[in-house]
Length: 134
Image (cartoon, rainbow, N blue to C red; front, side):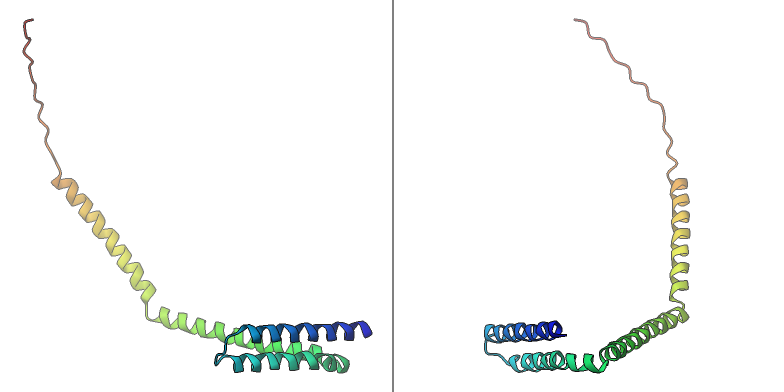
């Protein structure tokens, strides 16, 4: 039990040093107040963690977070599925398949037409060489 509190205090000290270094490393900017807010929220969570553990609420918080995360992912998947159904209902996939088939048919027709047009007749020509007398 004391080992846990020792690690907790050590983590708080490391965190505070890290936050201090981060804040001093940043130039004076408008983002400093947002960084302080975020790091303060994380510090509050770090301080409250042992209290939650004593009362056995740490697993409940993790389960709550996981359920919210699961719900968000589920909602995202449902939205994506709805979008795909809308897209399919418009028949875009069918149109693409038809246009591909029509393009292939045109290529075949053009190819057979070219074969008919390219009937080249070759005549045999004989060339005689004259022998030169040396």
